[in-house]
Length: 611
Image (cartoon, rainbow, N blue to C red; front, side, top):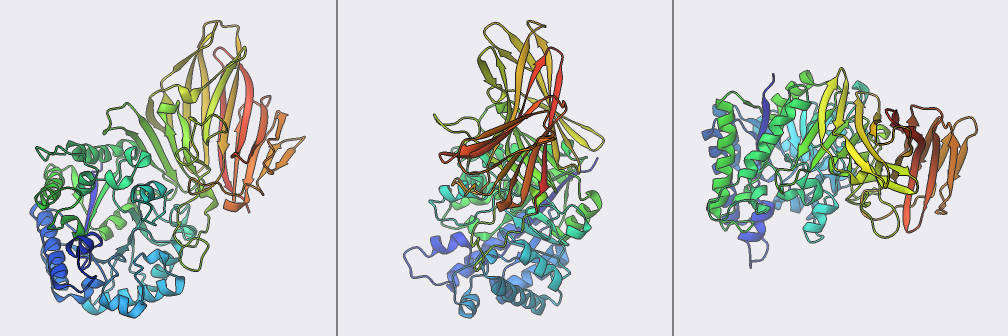
């Protein structure tokens, strides 16, 4: 059995995002302020001391500003020699007097610059690093690194093998909870390490030809329910995320949630062939001497000390391996294949509910299954398209780096909708004598298993009560590695009247987008495929086509170069496709079939690139 792998990453930001505004309160902006620089360096030293005191190796992400500071450089060299820390290079922490003077901008997000400026900044930062240390770094990172940036770095500085490349679900939810002022939009990526494709950072490489040449890790390890449902910045294994979320006892200064969250990450080895990962990425702004997140400095230091102490204790017990980023990249390349998925059967550990989500990520898709909605798919990103999505000034997407969804319950309502219209979801309905029940209303629990290269979710059976019939049904969902398909199997275990027949309607309501706001659906083509093919070209007119024995029902979405289809196990089932309307700009694909006691019916959701 492999152990729990942890990356601890510190960055000596000389002008930390948070400290600058707090320390400088009431003063004119001065990013060269000596007191600010001194405090920042003192905090970095404290963080280094806490990690080392607990026997943990650190990856030191030198910022551009820190490369101009002799003391910061000497600390990094010393801790590399004495503790085995890796000296790496961050693309965060760009702002300093030298940067502002050269680039004449207050922008600091590397992925938002024009491509020409990205290249110039990378060259500046990497060459300055070489001047100070005599070698080029093996690791780098930012909140997000777009594919063009990553490809340029790997081509120009081939020593780089690992990078912090996205911040899980840092999209509209985080934007709204930052008072609509935090323009970092990159939902839709992996929550755990992956090998990014050359085409799109969020979409994992399917083979060597697509391999960008680096191993990517997320910026912070998030709570895969609380972060998805709300602001991710409050729910991470960085101890001071937990303080920001006020998830601690204000009298005793204890935070059991932090340890439960770390432990849940440890448990993910059950779903990933004995491998589990966690990371903690810390800048000095989190330990401001004036306090932060309604917490005094003493609590900020205590929380970080306690977090490192917990990791250190796990290491002493032989349950954890601390690695630098470059060490982890080598480990990951040996451990994982391109097509091996990342899986997480995640349970609520914060709000006291029984909620379960299952997350699945591979080179062809990212999917989320919600057991509170009967095992419905509530988030689906079609990585199979490997959508090229340039980001930054001079592109169509200056800030929005999110990978588009086909299904997203938070931005497109899911099952629970307003009085009219539909939300995006992949679920099923049972109908009998004029009554209809959606399985999304039937809460259940899931159990994970693996057969060969197929990951299986077996849901607890649910019983649907009609006026004069009860039906007990069990769902299984199959994620076959490398297939770009999800198989969903419905098994009728029992009917109160064995001779009865019900209509099973397997359906998917979808659209595309990256935010709450609708996109133009014109250009989407819906089809019932088969001998007598039928087609709808989307015009918001509520039309539907149906075909008995359809070989597939499909939608081609040119805007995201994606084809999505459903296929069925029974060639007598009726396939249908339905167009939405302006108030409900969705499309629906589905199969309807009469089903009786002890019968099993399966459908597949398939994703492919549409040229």
